[in-house]
Image (cartoon, rainbow, N blue to C red; front, side):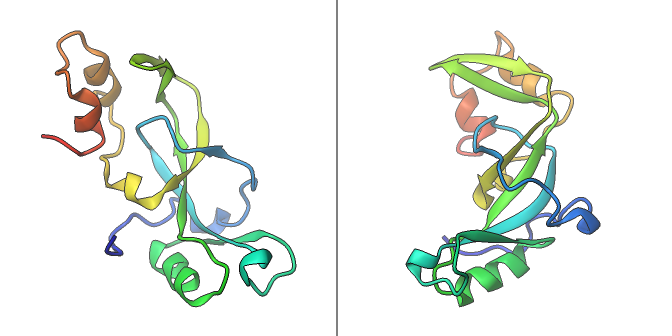
Amino acid sequence: MKPREDYPDAIDPTRVGTYPALAKAGGGCVWDEVLEYRVWCHAERGAPDLSDCYHAFATYREALDLSSSTPGAEEPLALVRQREYISEPTPGDYVHLREERVAEWPVEFLRRPRRNERTIPDFLSPDAPANRLDILRGLAG
């Protein structure tokens, strides 16, 4: 996939690197803020560090530069804050959760629009089109 440089910067660059290493993985369908970009490096894959670790950055470009120039480095991930999100406890059963969640996402997920006051209610509406998940994911119009 072609790298993009227009992903949003971290919401508060002074906090980059201060968030807990453990976060949820993916999910939730919508996002509110980018907290940081992370590049995980693995010693067993040739990273110079002796243990698995990540490096945090305020911009995608910085994360991509380290990722592409460091042996054993993964592709960058975005650490996002979700103030509200969509849970799918069983396939096709969607629930609007109004609680904060922090998750690591593939940066491509940031191509989805940020959540606004209508995103989740429109998605859950009985009048929502059958392909509503594809629309939310940016796969359909």
